[in-house]
Length: 151
Image 1 (cartoon, rainbow, N blue to C red):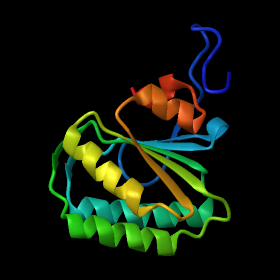
Image 2: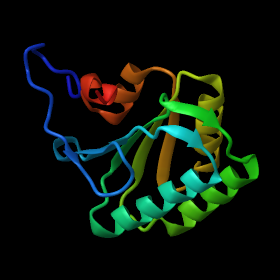
Image 3: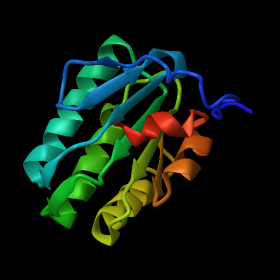
């Protein structure tokens, strides 16, 4: 089955660090970029994410993204800024093909922000989904669940 290794002894697929925010990993074999932001999710960090996404999409747009919000210490983003960010992302996205963006958070506040973003991206080329379970996100992205642990 795609996304599930058949042998527990198989090594994880190679990742490489990419330019951009800290803790950003690229898994070329799965066309996946994974990121685990840390600290405070505020308007400034959200804008940095948007700027980075635009830059990466101009060079080599991956079709899958995984954003793990579990290391956030606080969510201090204004709801109106999330709306503005989503509208801008939908306008700026220049990809020829749809992008799958899985947003993961076990925390209710982070998950609420992820769900808000998911709803704002409906009917755009960015297919965003919020998850509280990494394994379900892995199935949806069609990648091995182990790589979404980001360890």
